[in-house]
Image (cartoon, rainbow, N blue to C red; front, side):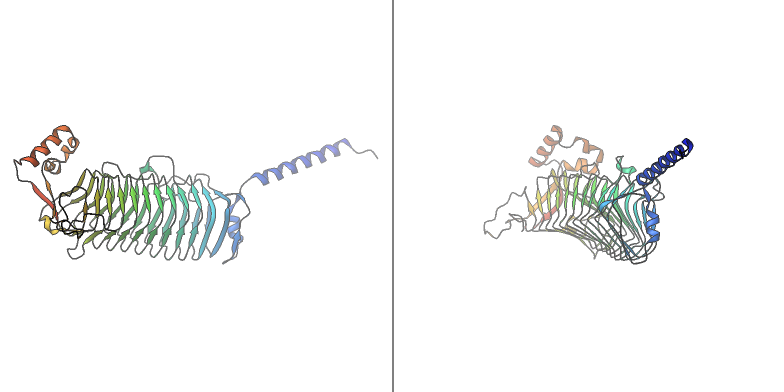
Length: 412
């Protein structure tokens, strides 16, 4: 029996549409939420390599492994992954394409839970990177985070901690963000992170007992700024090229009992900025820091006093120290610092200068007392006026500081 031509056409059409449907299904990104819903609580989900569509919400303990070959992409709406459970691990994922809402905190990961592990992930083309809200005892490490290629003020935070405690943020590579913001969050540790080309590397507000240790902060408007944060420890960081007009390596405001140790502050508008501590018994201690090639090495403002400057090394700063405020400059304690402008000798070879190192404000007082005159500093007229003031003062210079035991060489 001869087959009907209509039967052959129908068969060919069926085969064509079946092939087309299979091709479309193969090429379309699968919803990540389907995989999350099917996984049992406590399971480890090894996602096959490929691209998945977000958003996804995790509401049970779960480990998700991507091995660097899994891309989860949002269609420029909302947050890519949201965690609403304890004991969740996100590892080896590539997250892209969040929404643009600052109010909704659109980003790569929004986490609300305890004992989370977020490591070895890449976040690109997201507004915010990782947000921890009421998240405790968690680890965020070895992630690469990038926001958008827009003005820094319009980006989102690379990391955002809100009412979150005892978290460890380690070895992350973060760039092109707005800030790392830590608000009403205590006892958090930030170690060995690299933060570049952003606005404020660290922005602390009511972030008591925070540790910032061993980080590289490069080409940000400001390295570290802490407001109303008690008992913070800033140690062994390298902070470079914070050269905005108001930029600083480390800025402390209304902060007490702070310890700033062993940091390298290079090429900033201000190396250190600080007002006087809120509590006269809880001082701010600067110990063993290198402050070099800044416009102003140390800038203290407000009522004088409450700072201890011990064994720091000052090198090639245009103005080593500027202090603006009322009170007695002797209320600040300076001892054992190394000054490249020290003009004394060490005749007994004990490593300390034979006479105190004193800094006075001569023509500097013009721009110190009249901020608009800063525009003319380093001009030939100001340099000549400063030279004449030091040669034959026609007004009483102001004592800025006295270091009774200046070191001849930097303290190791």
